[in-house]
Length: 220
Image (cartoon, rainbow, N blue to C red; front, side, top):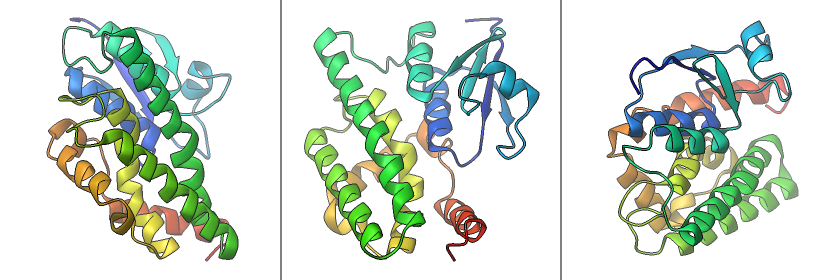
């Protein structure tokens, strides 16, 4: 849509922000990227997301949209002429939302527990994380993408966590590919898409960031 003013309030390593970046790239939407300091939140962020005070926030013609999956759905509805992310069939659309919601409820929390805990708690988090990935692997099956032949809503929800896997594995001392080879092959395949590869961050930089956080929290 010509003349649109689009700004993304985000933080570089956020998997939730990366979802929005992938969706905007898939749609070919030009936007201004605004990096936020999450320890010293800007007036703009507090004004645009006064309820949760979190990134990402998409500001479209001065109006904010918050929460990453809601933003991705908004992008899909507004820029609907290119690269549809949600299927047109109501049941298929509901299934896509179900699995994206599953990713939302499992990946971040279990991943965070892996790098913020030790001993039995960490072992339990690793098991929960792998079990969740195995369920996703089963849903993916032999399809190129979760929705079939093209990148869709569930892919956008899940793929940003791939650049956090190295941090989880290194800190948790385990190997995701050993348990979920098909899922890792899928992630690597998706990285061949420019919309994905340009939106995801370097796993080594994410790991360094997590190590810094662990030192801040007194875990190192």
